[in-house]
Image (cartoon, rainbow, N blue to C red; front, side, top):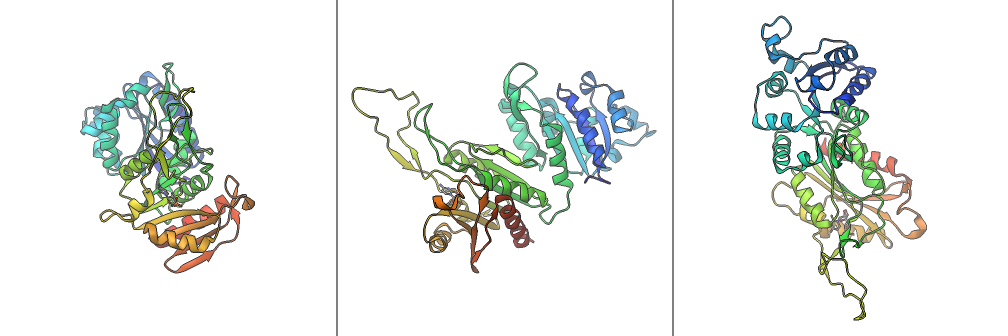
Length: 397
Ligand code: C5P
């Protein structure tokens, strides 16, 4: 699947570097050629011998070795690949990249390259969450640099949270998605998915039964056609797809903020089941049982994300797709919804309990566009997702 593809792999100095050895194997198994570069800090974690043995090539370590041109000049080295992958991308490497520093081989290659770059960040959770790292991340993303991970979990330093490098196979999937020639190559597509949680107090919330299955299948199908997918998800039952940029949120307001931060995009698909209301009287302390009676909850309307984006005067995605879960008069209600929201397409489905669609594995949809209503056969949510992704590719073509 990666036959003939050439990856320049920069290994930074972090404990996750051991996983990069596995990454090299998985890439080579799939036919990729891997040219490894090891930073001085990286060489504290994995040996040049292991790296070059697994890559089947010399590992480049020193800027000045290259400068005598006995091997390959650094400019040339930075340009030979189809993709530059940095794994682990440490806080230090990210900071250097964001600032444009070039004081060793890795940072010089990253500054000199005109090839797409993918980072697999890995660092302590506090370092990841530090405003400086988040600022650098935003700068790098704005420069068009892609990321995979980091994931949440136990860390080698004994803490828990985001900062673990993505697993080797997740990185492989991401690399494959980027190097796969599909009709959506070069297109950026935003997908919202899952339910939202609207807090009542710190331990209680209002939610809905959306599993996030259709949104996840759609994210996967779009990525498989080569799209760069930003997947903004509420707390869903199913895991997010691989090979997409995942942004996790809880509330509708956070989802809107994440969507706005992810724009511009060529298309946006709103598959999330967003709560219509939030509790405006949400308490920051746990509500107690009281003799004075029941708590009174007051509600406020949530922002309508689909409508907000559909009606953007500047920077509106070229194609905006909404979903409509209906229980009666599906076509009429969904057609009216398309007009009310201002989106281009509505993917409508009948979620009356008898259909078993909500929370199930199948979906029967009607696609509503300015050409009218088109009924699709009932099929697995993955099949529906692939069909919709193919339609999106056609529309963006
Ligand atoms: O109005 P209704 O909730 O039925 O519309 C469903 C469509 O609108 C879905 O695409 C959903 O993702 C989107 N939506 C939204 N923000 C809301 C409510 C719904 O984006 N607050």
